[in-house]
Every structure is written in C-alpha cells, then in structure tokens.
Length: 79
Image (cartoon, rainbow, N blue to C red; front, side, top):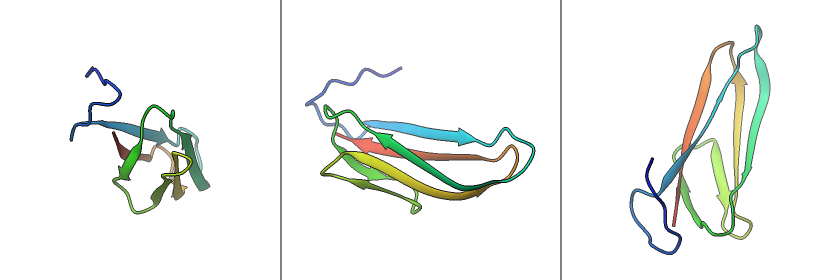
C-alpha cells in the first residue's frame, strides 16, 4: 500500500469506500456516511450520488437500491 504523509499533497491521494449487498433481497435506501479524520482534507468524490462537506470532512453517499451481490464503490480524493 502507498504511504500517505499529511501535509504533502499529491494527485494520488485517494481512498475508496465500497459496500456490497450480501443479502438475498434488495437493500433499499442505502446511505453511506464516512467521517474522514481531520488530518485529511477531502477535495472530491467520484460519484454524483456522493457529496462532502469541507467544513465537517464528512462524505455522504445516497446510493439508493443495491440488488443482491451488487457492489457500490466511490473514490474520495484528499490532501
């Protein structure tokens, strides 16, 4: 894995949030909320169903419905 040093911005600073519905029926109204540690500053997300607050450093994704075995993934860029 890559090493991240706080305070040294790079175009490669990214992490992924991934979730999979391992159940036998649809998962409805799926929402993901990630409180990113304050040592990182979120600068962007790769999916239009997601957003972030620069003030609170919280990433929120309103995924909607995930069918059985369906996966949702989003990349989060940070400084």
